[in-house]
Image 1 (spheres, rainbow, N blue to C red):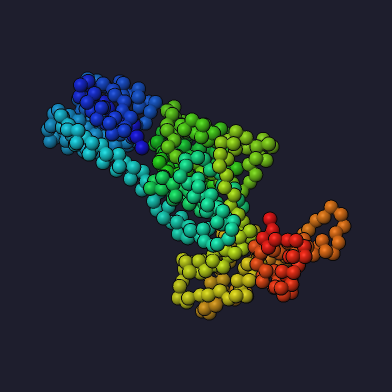
Image 2 (cartoon, rainbow, N blue to C red):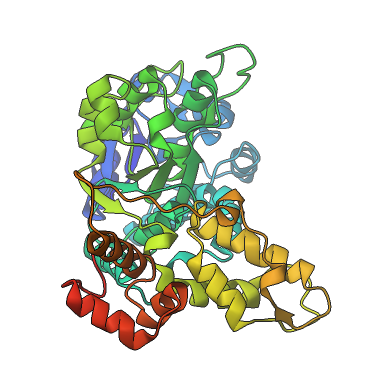
Length: 450
């Protein structure tokens, strides 16, 4: 992508030649003939790179280097090629020191290297977090169920676009993993995926974390801080539980989506937001918009493309695959190779999983511990939530139902619960699989009712 470069040079001929060379490489170049013009530009913009002459009519650039290099790399040009000046420039933090006249080949090489190194430094602080988050990160995508296949197809269709995506789904259903898959399959995959939990910080801290802040913006802001939008430059910014953010932040986030610009807390400069925003929620943002608790215009911007993450109870076919994955990849003792008995799998499939994939992983890891030195995880090793100990069945009719209507509705409920697996439904109903098939035909049901 094009980078913004500030060129500070009082020799207009040389300046024009350098600017032409940089623009031919696809960069956006702003020229200043001295520090007065440069300061005016820096007040309103933040370039990715500064190239400056040492001796300018209104100041010595070496004295300016410590403040400049704190914000972006600086390449110094000079016609006075003394070793002392070179040493001073490098000690002050200059990325490179070049003598005039600079050949086009040398300039291209040094500028490209400076921009690449700056991008690598920006990425570094997020690498450890990304690698940690990727441990087991493919778990949502494990399975063969139709709902999972539909999500995969949707991700593949939209990943290559920069359109804003809203991921909806219950807590623990894998919304962040969907967001990560969108990033990994996009053209931004080589840059950062930065996740932010929107419900853990107060308004001011949230704003500082997201947008960054300038020195002195508030008590304790002793130096400038770049926010997560800048940290995710060129990549993807994932805003989890977006429905929890305060109205003031909603307005500022809307501005980012509409204009592609933002300001740090306490700042006056408009900065470019070169990020793709993916948001997630377990709340009904459309209803919140109608109730006035979430900005309707922000909801419309966020929901340009919506992906619904299915709860685990709607993809029961995937549970045996997920269980095998968690048993194989748990991150503690592996002294004994574990397997899960068929009876335990049946109990896992029958449970409704209010905590979704996250709860399943916790149950399996607990079972690995409780099974101790045995190599088989059995039903007695499984510890479910309260919902498992008091199963409830609820059906409703407009009028008093007949026995056939009750039976048909209950059969439909079990077919939906077990994704149309007649053998599992037969086991629950305590009848033969053949009888299940006859009942399906009798009541005109499909094996995977909607």
